[in-house]
Image (cartoon, rainbow, N blue to C red; front, side):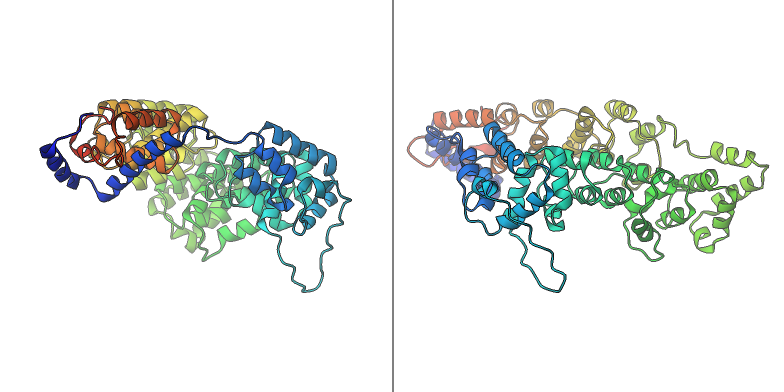
Length: 530
């Protein structure tokens, strides 16, 4: 790249006003980092065996988890050694695990030394008001590292015996539990352990669905309360009332006269067929077709007298539309059997798998989409994915479907793409968009949303950052996006190599990289490489 002359430099400096200080600073930091990384690249890299040495030598023993993480995480040799330690010294012996928990807080030596020492009896529980200082979090993390590498049945037995604080720390909050711990709890855990896992606010809905499938009312209640739980999964909990009764504490929360539970907790109750649960579900106001369906389900599950009692209840009747009351009253007056059939025939076909896909393909309003996704429509994911591919749903609908517990990875990705494309709106219009990132970069100009859009699509694995160098235009927005990915450590080796080669070839000249070429970026409609 030839160096601009004095006149060119003056014009380029003037053009800097088109770029915000934030974007300019981020871009310059990116280019400096590329050059610096190129100079420092040789001789760098993780030191082999560091994680294994951390397990063998770290002192005190409770620091092992932190030291292993600092060494780059568990590799194959380290995993094998941790598994050997756990199997040899701990196994399924709950008392041994509890003793290790108590000893880790004070032991100053290494973890292998502690495990090889004679077992330390667990500290007996105190019955008076004596306060005992909690174990450091490093104790829990190191215990978690061992539990992750022990037999699933042994891990479940240990969790059942360890203090509540350990279970909560490792399963219910913070970073996501390791897949091995999740599998151990789901397959072999007790109620307390599964309920702790079900409370984790970042748990995938597929895992939450597996916890519901365990058939434990307390665990299902924890899933129901989880903010990640979908409306469809809450409906599954409600639909199983006859086989897995609703947890008493959860029922009390849902039916409290002046309760403050979220709307997302109440809407799934519409199809429960339980009058006590249906009444609070009507509290927020639902469509007439949903009201009629709710009364029809009570009739089917509990009988016509339960419907009459609900209509006679002033508090419940006040939440029903006059048209619905009249329709249901007429059905109740019809001969036995005929009225119920007529009510269902006149109602919304919630059981038709084609109904929801057709509605989502044409619905645009946020409130209408919320109603459709909260009402008891059958969710046929194959039909929904096919309809979305033909006529993209609005991003609001895709947000819910992208994390659906029954969606495959491919289906989730298709729905997620429409959500991720939303910040960069084609023609400035808010609509569903299933165009892959590479094609968008080739066909459309980036705008001010480039950094947000690029970060989302890169995190999802849908964007190759190299395209921001070779294809995306204009260069200023592409560079802002690259700067964001660099800050988030999302560039990837290929993009880093491309940028490094470009900066070394065109920007290194004994002065600060970026000073002479960066001002030219705002005016060029070309890709950054050009």
